[in-house]
Length: 322
Image 1 (spheres, rainbow, N blue to C red):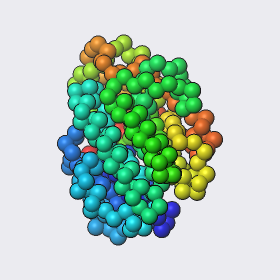
Image 2: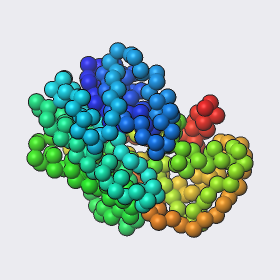
Image 3: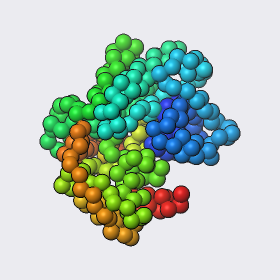
Image 4: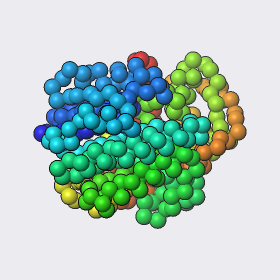
């Protein structure tokens, strides 16, 4: 990938910063667009990109993707290779409290990014970070891109469905090459502090109770961030080569792990038993997620390699280093 120039929105966040690290390691010039909002500590996001600040081939544009003034600072004809659009308001439960914020950021912001990408001399290839939340709770597992229905149960999930539809619209209207990648519960070093593995590991290590919603049987397809990065870069390569056969791909681990099992694995990694604070199921939560990886394996050569137990241990080592 040496010689490429990528615009990476949300590049200071959890997943975006891991993508940034790998792109830079491969000799790619990267410009990050990020607003460092206060959904969680901005200083943590700044720390994520600090190793790249001031290095040749890296630029930072600090601004909101919804604002025209942000995009006006970027010349779409300046030799870009592609756009990787990670920036979004994330989280199911917070989206129930602030639906308008999620719609404006995830839908209007995506439209602004697409408009900028299509204003280049040739529309720039576009990779969208989508989510397993688009599937909702109405499908049998594993979720297959071709056969599953999209019935999100949160504003966050609905905003990602809308973002995918916008990408399709730009493909039809401008002939843009594009892909939407549906991430399944990504975890690993730098994970947002509001997410379960991060929150549970922190609280268990301190001997504090952890809030457990429901009876512990709900399950998630937990996917290590390095597997997601490899899948995203494979999609980008195939998109640039013109060999991508489909528009939408699942990136998961092909394993669905119950909440109770996840807690046990975190306990083992931390070396301490959890104090459980049992609470009712929450609105917006789904019973189970599980990615069908057939399409991603066939077209991208995607094959997740990080075992959940190893990935959690890796995360706990990182957490302790902080």
